[in-house]
Image (cartoon, rainbow, N blue to C red; front, side, top):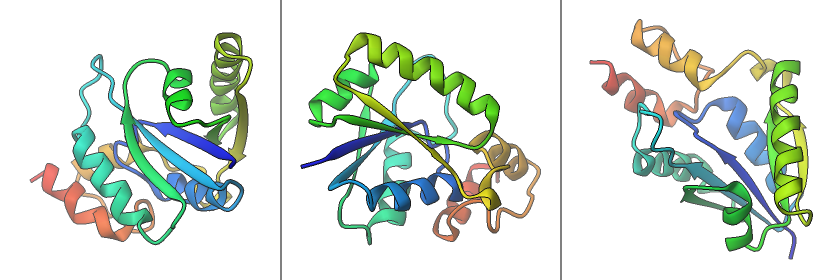
Amino acid sequence: MRIAVYPGSFDPITNGHLDVIKRASRLYDKLVVGVLSNGNKTPLFSVEERVAMITSVTNSIENVEVDTFEGLLVDFAASKNATVIVKGLRTVADFEYEFQMALLNKALNPEYETMFMMTDTKYSYISSSMVRELAGFHGDLTGLVPCEIIEKIKEKYK
């Protein structure tokens, strides 16, 4: 069975993330969306809220599992029996950072391959931080995030 992990903070999940999830799920028998719980950051949504939102927008994709992790990505991947790490890219700047991370992960465990997947160009300008900033100014989130979670985001800024 070919298992891949798609890690991220997903605070919140965007349509760009969802695009990568849908496309990667067609390439692997199982895709585990790994929601990072990072004690050094203060996210807008709790890890439980992020898992719930991702689960709600991916529940129709049978081979997608959503889980949380702390610590090293390679350890999480090993716990899921994954051999591939999927990384979504929007820009060249994303590639530079993710390339370094891929090399580090390869050094930590040579068994893992990183697959870079470009998001659809219509989502290339969307980031979670941009969504949070726009929501903070009560901007329109239509087309940026899955419609099912727009109200959840707006609630955080009431």
